[in-house]
Image (cartoon, rainbow, N blue to C red; front, side, top):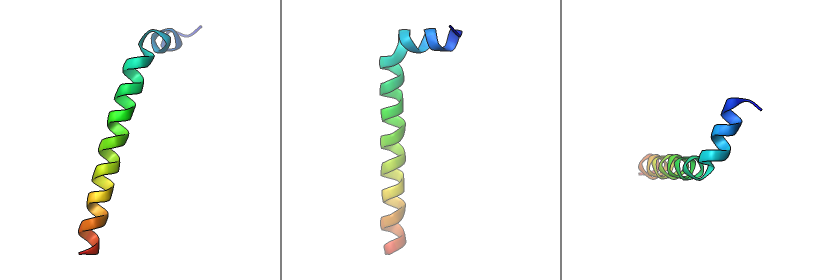
Length: 39
Protein backbone atom coordinates (compact mmCIF):
# COMPACT_ATOMS: atom_id res chain seq x y z
CA UNK A 1 0.00 0.00 0.00
CA UNK A 2 1.29 3.50 -0.83
CA UNK A 3 2.29 5.64 2.13
CA UNK A 4 -0.37 8.28 1.41
CA UNK A 5 -3.15 5.67 1.69
CA UNK A 6 -1.78 4.60 5.08
CA UNK A 7 -1.58 8.28 6.13
CA UNK A 8 -5.16 8.89 4.97
CA UNK A 9 -6.52 5.92 6.91
CA UNK A 10 -4.73 7.22 10.02
CA UNK A 11 -5.84 10.85 9.57
CA UNK A 12 -9.15 10.54 7.67
CA UNK A 13 -11.06 12.48 10.34
CA UNK A 14 -8.66 15.43 10.11
CA UNK A 15 -8.82 15.25 6.32
CA UNK A 16 -12.64 15.24 6.37
CA UNK A 17 -12.74 18.24 8.74
CA UNK A 18 -10.21 20.15 6.63
CA UNK A 19 -12.13 19.42 3.42
CA UNK A 20 -15.37 20.50 5.08
CA UNK A 21 -13.83 23.79 6.20
CA UNK A 22 -12.37 24.47 2.74
CA UNK A 23 -15.70 23.71 1.03
CA UNK A 24 -17.62 25.87 3.52
CA UNK A 25 -15.26 28.84 3.03
CA UNK A 26 -15.38 28.49 -0.76
CA UNK A 27 -19.21 28.29 -0.63
CA UNK A 28 -19.48 31.42 1.52
CA UNK A 29 -17.05 33.37 -0.68
CA UNK A 30 -18.89 32.26 -3.83
CA UNK A 31 -22.29 33.28 -2.42
CA UNK A 32 -20.89 36.61 -1.22
CA UNK A 33 -19.53 37.33 -4.71
CA UNK A 34 -22.90 36.43 -6.25
CA UNK A 35 -24.72 38.82 -3.89
CA UNK A 36 -22.29 41.65 -4.60
CA UNK A 37 -22.64 41.13 -8.36
CA UNK A 38 -26.46 41.35 -8.13
CA UNK A 39 -26.25 44.76 -6.45
